[in-house]
Image 1 (cartoon, helix red, strand yellow):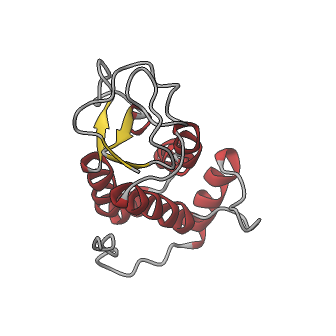
Image 2 (cartoon, one colour):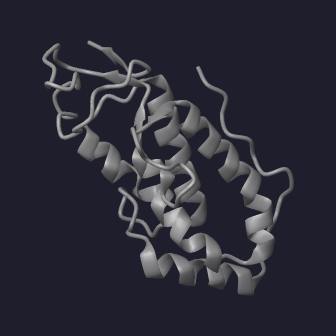
Amino acid sequence: MHPASPEPTEEVLPTAEEYEAVRAALRTVARPGTDGLPCTLNSLFEQWDALVREVEEGYGWSAPELSNDLWCRSVLARIWPSLPPRLQAVRRAELDEIDRRFHNATVGRPGQDDGAGRWWLRRVPRRIDAESDRRSAHGWPLGWDDLTFPRPAEVEIVD
């Protein structure tokens, strides 16, 4: 079991202006959540944390599914510059911690720069739960065979 992401150290209630700035930023990029409700900043953090927990334990879906699941982190990146500075300051440590956990639970794709933007899209889980023992020519399980580089030794496939 992995520890939950730290909660913000102080209770910060957004002002009406800050709340509207967050809503305006979300309207430009975010799709409704899986429950059909509007996306919120808190729900993006919750989805990012839940995905990271899943990756830490062993991701059981395919590479295209992971790319799809990473939308929550991509939305956070897109709206971050539009968030009020006070909210950025309060939430930065939480985001950094979830990012650190994802980085530790994944391996960089060969030849990809982690320092460039959208670095989370250029990483693969260290532990992949596979439904089959069939592997691609590069050593990836079914659903990951679109990866055209050899599976790094740090990536464990669990059948």
